[in-house]
Amino acid sequence: MSESRIPRYYAPKGRFTTIDLAGQAVEAYRALHHSGAGPGLLLLADEAGLDEGIRARADLFGEEGYSVLALGADHSVAHIAAAADVLRGFAETDGDIAVVGHGPGGVLACRAARESGFKAVVAFDVLELAEDPSILDAVPCPVVVQFGTDGAPAALAAADTIRSRLNRKDGSRVFDWEEAGPSFAIPKRTPFHKRADSLAHTRTLELIRRVLGPYYDYEALFAEHTYHEFTTRDVDATMATMIEEPYVNHTPTLTGGVGHDMLKRFYKYHFVDQNGSGRSRERISFTLGPDRLVVESYTKFRHDQVIDRYFPGIEPTGKEVEIATVIIVKFRGDKVCHEHLYWDQGSALKQIGALDAGDLPIAGPEAARKVLDETSPSNIFMQNSWATSDGKPI
Image 1 (spheres, helix red, strand yellow):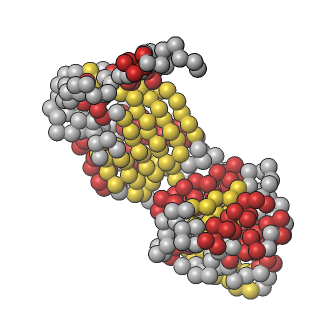
Image 2: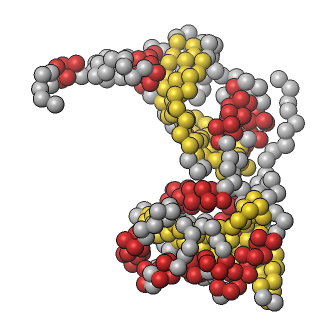
């Protein structure tokens, strides 16, 4: 196969700029999607201002598809309304705008929502909203409020107070993340909590994508990704469907790669030419979220060549294998961010004769077949105990 010439994807980085707010020159930070345009997103910092963490957050929203303008929180409601007008006026801003604010920036986002014409508000770590509920009551659009509550009883109390008052039917919600503390959603800082932030970011996108877009066809984007994995077997084209530093984790066997170079090496030498003959795949379900696609599938192949991702260190056996697989794909904008893959490794090893299951409750191909046909036999490993409930009232 000849080497392709598809260029490597590099996410565009933001830049500092100066904007005019009511005759005052104000420092701001701009970030943009690689397409060159997107709905507007105003990002309001906490007390730390436009530090490395807030700039990284602005770049992330740019990758997600937005025309981003980031400001510090030391502004008035009038200034934020003016900044909203500046953001709308950018040629790269396509459509309406939303606001995301942290700490004092989140409170300011709520105070300025009406005057600024925001279509959605997301506010992090905003204790003041519990102390003065009228601020939230005056927000005319859907609002999502998020708190890191680990070691912060005041934040947990604030979340409960706001939740008890937020009785709208527009998708407004309150989330408290017990595994993380305040400022957990700002990278490059000590309180940053990667897993909680990832979940909170999805909750942010649930609201903003519903109200503003942009809308991406994740099923089609993942189909393009797998087309290059399995059909063209073009590693460069495969990597071009992914973010700058993606990762893939085949969880049962710990195979894959983290970062561009490691993952490309894995694809090139341990994946695209290792699929076994007679490979077939049937889709069972697709479940879509604001930044994720969950794919459930049935796969059948013959273990007649080395297949490192399924059977590392095991020579080909010639045996046929049937497995059910769940793939959780996270996207960042229109690029694949990462993949988590799961299957029953015990069943796979049993089918190639590498595992003598004995009396252990480990199914062979019937495990995958039951995904195709739910009426196939159930409770095959508990026949004796199943018989004890026969005839009992239900």
